[in-house]
Amino acid sequence: MDVIVIGGGIAGVATAYQLRAAGHRVCVIERHATVAQGATYGHSGAVLPTPLDIWFGPTFMPHRLGAKNGVIRKSGFNRAARGFVRRLAALQDPAAFSLQYSRLRPLIEASREAMGEIEARHTFDFEQASDLLYLVRGAAEWQLAGTALELLRQYDMPHQVLGAAQCAALEPSIPTTPEFAGGVQLSGERTANCPLFAKLLKQALDLQGGVTFQFGREVTALRFDNHHAAVELAPPLDAAPRSREVDVMRADAVVVAAGAGSLPLLERVGLPLPLHPLRLHTLVAPIAHEECAPHRAIVDAVKRITITRMNHRLRIAGAAVLQSASQTSKPLDPALSEEALALLGQATHDWIPGAAKISAALAWEGVKLLSPDGLPVVGNALHPRLFVNLGHGPAGWGLACGSAGLIAALISGTPSGLPPDTLAALRPERFRG
Ligand SMILES: Cc1cc2nc3c(=O)[nH]c(=O)nc-3n(C[C@H](O)[C@H](O)[C@H](O)COP(=O)(O)OP(=O)(O)OC[C@H]3O[C@@H](n4cnc5c(N)ncnc54)[C@H](O)[C@@H]3O)c2cc1C
Picture 1 (cartoon, rainbow, N blue to C red):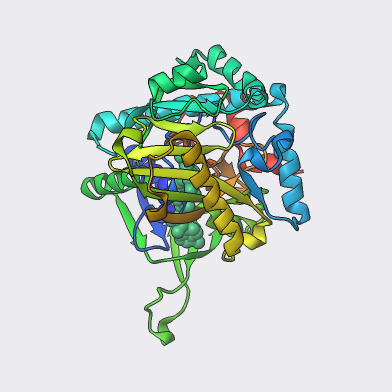
Picture 2 (picture 1 turned 90 degrees about the vertical axis):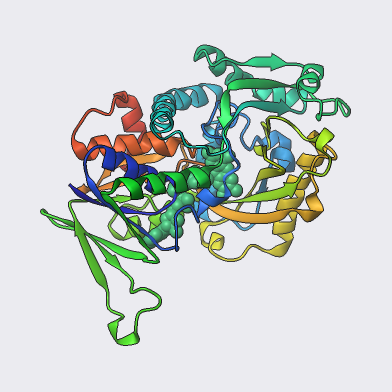
């Protein structure tokens, strides 16, 4: 089949890869000049989500921690934003969290397998590093992490629960004063460079053939009839004024994998999705003192701040700003931006003092979609020729590879290997009525 994939982030590139592997011809349409320029550019490194860093559950935005929960809330929420927060808060209930995680779990494992196959075939070097250390500050947070620890045990995920002194022994850059509750080491999990991975995947597709990339083109509308799917494209920015008419490109199927840009396209064809854009921040700082720098990635498990070492730099990411969706497309108020970057700087100072030269750090912010039930939106929707792959959350770039496999299976009419309750939980139409 001929398939159009909208979006050249990790979700779009991974989808193109899996579709090609299944024998389809693919055209990826991306409005930027190359791949990995959206949320994919700003990732913090963690490849797959674990019960300790997924963006829902008892440790995500707990009310009792107030402003210390790592998410900056902008006042003046509209109804949609309030509804989104309420639905996510329902997943703080341990039983609801465990059930939702159990539905996601098969996709995590399928993604691990899909990445393994890609790496075995191409021997890519994308700055992979094993071992993550999740750190927890106080007794109250440690108690909230109990359900996540239970899930690690239940799913036999190799891990070690450590006291504060053991954390410091493992990673001497972490000070034991002031006191903190402890941590969890997951040596089987890893970090890597997401945009580099997306670029390597694109290069492999270029060499292989069968996938074309149309850069600098923006899809403005989707069209479907019984025989074809089509996308309308805005004229290229450099087009002569008299030729500035709409181009239409036809295919047998369209996959919308355009990150935050997916929402208006889908809404216009009758699929409004209640996903919420979260603004996230990164600081890339040079290492100040090598003897103070960590040798493995560190995650503040409650604030959801990840500190990853990449050669001679530290990448510090998190500091979500929650505001009404309409405000996310406007520049962030400088005071909020400062607050977010200060949160990242403070976390670095608390956990690995002296390691990073924050004053010389480069700041970046990007928007990431989060769904109110914490799960990505993957599958067929509305029309037999429309497919969706988005909303993997701020801890799921690796998920894009498994989701891409699911899309390829659906388009090819082959079994995906995922259980029915996972497929139902990922369906784009699950939010309707
Ligand atoms: C600061 C930050 C830190 C993060 N840290 C992590 C982490 O540690 N681990 C993790 O797993 N995840 C992390 N994430 C999330 C992760 O980066 C995303 O889940 C992932 O990159 C999303 O990929 P995507 O392809 O869906 O979206 P994007 O990367 O946003 O790609 C969408 C693409 O579609 C294009 N597009 C949009 N609309 C159109 C249109 N109409 N026509 C043509 N093209 C269009 C955009 O230009 C963009 O390139 C982080 C995100 C941020 C912002």
